[in-house]
Image (tube, rainbow, N blue to C red; front, side, top):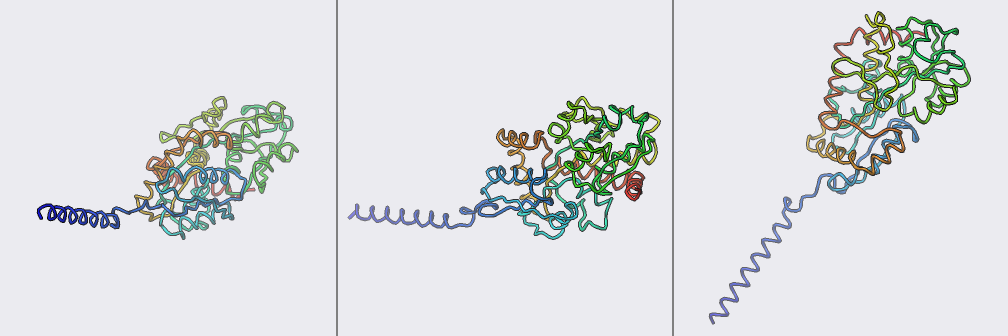
Length: 364
């Protein structure tokens, strides 16, 4: 009898334990899944497939899922139009603030806030930025046609220089034109080219003498032509630091910045302030931003995943092979602060320069 009672107590105890475990298993706290489990993140790219923005976005989409708790699907959606502005307006002004839509974009989405404010449907100061990469651009000339090989030769150019560009408000169009104005060199401005490929053809044909190309195109586009004698790099923009010095790119340590080659007496007044305003965005040449209002915990998840991905040797190798530069970037709060500090300068400290750029875009 005593043994039967003991067995009955054991059975009751085990049943109670099983019931408790079942309750814990069904508890939303015990069974809670990572937020991104079973979800799909869209990386919006505001440009056509095949360009550098699209290539970066697809690299991110391939490598990012394994670093996000819950291993969500990540897809790329190309949303073209208005030089990426349609995509920026959608992500930063229309998309749900759920952390499932991000924009990979060049700095035009920020530059447009002061160059073409009517086209912008968001406040960039409210946009959380989680990843930024700096970039320097080079001024490329055809020495056989223009008869110049280095910056100081510009003042003795035997031909009236033709500067090539894309859109009228694009910094890659405005900067080389502004540089020649700073030097005091008479020139003409030819815009409307589609991009680097078109500009290189125009350079080789002699339609233009000078244009600006990104540093990630140097090894592929410029260096082979330097060896042939059909291209020379006059200067680079560098990146503008917080103490207002121009830093050479580590990928182009042999190329001086415009600040280094421009005579000191030229670095004054609104035109020089305009140069600062034109170079400042290079500290965030490409970036990843999320919709304003996304909960901070999801921004943290994305930032931590990007940090881990950016340090992954496999990702770094594929990124550098595809784009010609390492994926060195600022991430999370550091990225957001760089953009916000630069925007503050552009909207407050460099207003004379910004107005000069706006007026320059109307010249032709």
